[in-house]
Image (cartoon, rainbow, N blue to C red; front, side, top):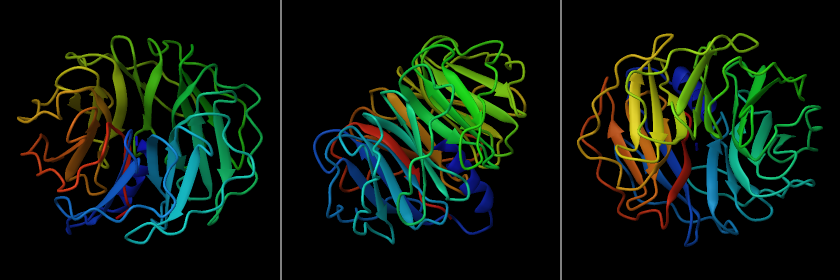
Length: 344
């Protein structure tokens, strides 16, 4: 996390009058433990104990299963993916898959029903998907038309019928039908993202698909209905530089984009198109590039990981940024990468 479709689905399922309480897992680079997790209740609780089997190197992304019983992590070194049972803390790591992802794993996502686990990685076939049932099943066959470059992020559609991958080479985004395996790749959009895709998210209703990318306009959004529609007009105020992550709010009314230059996160009203950018937060996320964004399942808080201390910043959200929450008493130990809130 950034697995933005799952987070949106969790939010859509988790509405109600009670504030969200759950857990927040953050992946990061040096030094170990490479993943740090906290209770969340309108603020950070005391850090959970580290996993007994640590990640071997940089954590890149994290995703909770839809039922909250497992926590999956994409990381830089072999076995590239690690999954732990989760119950307000790490359980004993599950056995590695019999066929590992081919190289450095960058992003990870569970399907909405929790039956499959997708990993985007740097070496062909660039995406690997496994059946999941309290352990890895046999890796699904690769798609007949592979993504064309390093896999950077992955998302399932809210109904689980499609899977999207962003990557480092044109067309920068590839989408496939999904039904316990890859279908024939959909046609590319008529207007491609401008360069390397870094973030991807379906809207909670599945009607739109957003891509954060490395060249202006830094974010591109398309209508989606078993294929790409005509790209929406760019926002009147663009993100400041390379788009690194993208996330729809659980109700689909707002769209957050993280990026490489100040203010590091930009949020827009969304209603089949961009509204006027919200005012920046009064306290910006650190002073280094923004990496990923995620909303709590109730949409009441918006979190951003970034490349300098405190590595993660969380804000109350109510049609705009509230006053930043206090930093956790024990910070992640390195640059924030991906992250995830547990289901409501």
